[in-house]
Image (cartoon, rainbow, N blue to C red):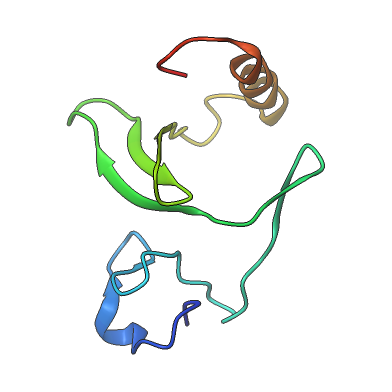
Length: 100
């Protein structure tokens, strides 16, 4: 495993989250950064910080590009089809609300 920085990832790795504490980027098991594509747009910087918003809830709080506060929705396997999830995500992108 490795991350995108030059730190010793064995010491900086946060267990079960796969985030390097040194650079706050996800640790890529193949030691290669993958470029994510969403609707034809390249997502260059991953979410870098995770914390539970409240214990019983499934959403997590994160920061995109190091400064944009975002909510991260966790889904249990089989709870929603991929097409339904993408339909919900596309709907959320078009809404204008300070919390979205």
